Length: 278
Image (cartoon, rainbow, N blue to C red):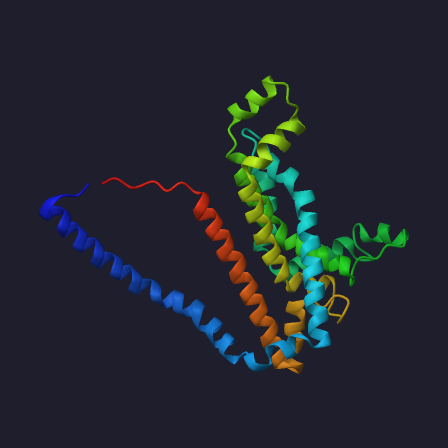
């Protein structure tokens, strides 16, 4: 630890440096905060509940809630095996699969929607076969779920993979020596020890699915009561009903903030806090 006059001088220097970094951080923080504050100030709070009870708004909120939960459920089922593979040491295709999982997060949303349409549309790669079976996915609630899962799935996979990777191989080997099978190791050892990463991934994926717009509007369309989610209702309301667009935007911002702050609180409570020695 610092001691004496030298520690006092270093402390003052550190304080000046910290204040300088605060000043340098202000432009970006203000750039992020200012539009959100402007949005909240424009929301008609005195009529907020009345606006949210409008039929079109209720339908959009209901559809967003149901489809986002369904997409997270689909992501858990399909993404958990991928996350577990990525967490295995020495996995040869790890870099390739990891890059493939990351790809939807950097693709333009319109490209993601068009890609889904080319794959599952009536004349798509798989959609033509499904059409022969009488199954049509585009412009249905199922299309909304798939679009949300496509863009939100990586958030769950990456978080779950980090949690799975923290489980030491020695623990798995000890469980195997005691007679546990691979499924028992995963169920009774890996899952309980990585629950925080799984919950974090689910929360982040749900928030991302709730706000999905670009892929949804191309692959599922914008049909009120059928495929119109909250972001799509905001897009339509911007031209027809600004108050409803502002109210829905406020709800999405609030939900996103709650999800993020909850995840960060959980992470901070469960991460070990070690003092730094100088």
